[in-house]
Length: 309
Ligand SMILES: C[S@@+](CC[C@H](N)C(=O)[O-])C[C@H]1O[C@@H](n2cnc3c(N)ncnc32)[C@H](O)[C@@H]1O
Image 1 (spheres, rainbow, N blue to C red):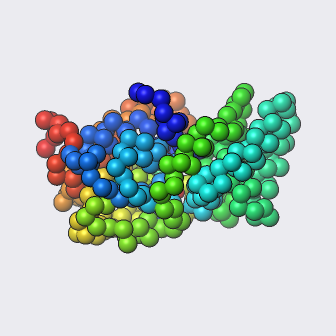
Image 2: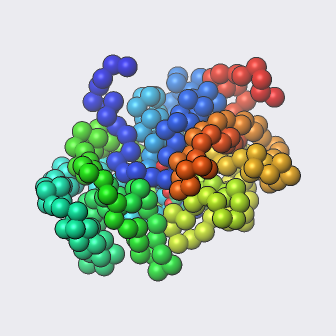
């Protein structure tokens, strides 16, 4: 691939559920003429944005994009990257210069002090954004998890040389974000954009494979089966308005052959099963390849797999 300044555009945080390894599958199931249309791209559960930045890099014909996430602190970082990237870089540089030379004990003390400051709400939006990135880069596994009071509570991680200030990524992301409208709310707040030239990619918190398995506590609100059903109704709504969509979710049937939850819920749509390695499970034995679902109303895909129904 030719290296342009957009090559560097990628997630500025680590985020559970990142879709980097599914990009090839998403590309296969996009509408056939996707690269040649004037498209509005909508991502109601943007998370770390691995799909967003890939889409914006790969399809310059996307004239307008809309992203949303329910997490206000994450969305605050998107806004900071879009509106004041150099100010954000300068704050991150200061944090990096302070953190990296410290020994393990002092790094931990600095992490805990910054985590407390982040949770205190006594800082302005730009400082909040810089601390979000700092904590994400220095916490355990790059997780974002809140307790019931909505406070970030992930412990310190032990990376030798974490990349706290990635200037090239932030500048490249800032440029691509100029055509992106940034919303903070429930996924249904993207309803107003449904229409014929709008494409939706949904990546909701996955339905857990079992009651103890998957991580889906991104925020204090839970995404349970009632939410999965409400999301299916939303897909029906955007489809009725003429939008095409792809939605990812876990393949609960591959774990328990009698679990037809998604096969029944999305029986009106095409369900593709794709393979992905999942790294969320802390038990190394349970990491490995799992099938996932890609559900869609796209009739003519860019690539038609002969083995698909
Ligand atoms: C699986 S992650 C998205 C991962 C993303 N595609 C990536 O590559 O990093 C799901 C996201 O949905 C958000 N979320 C949870 N409930 C939501 C809701 N009701 N409406 C909008 N976003 C929600 C979470 O904050 C989380 O960032």
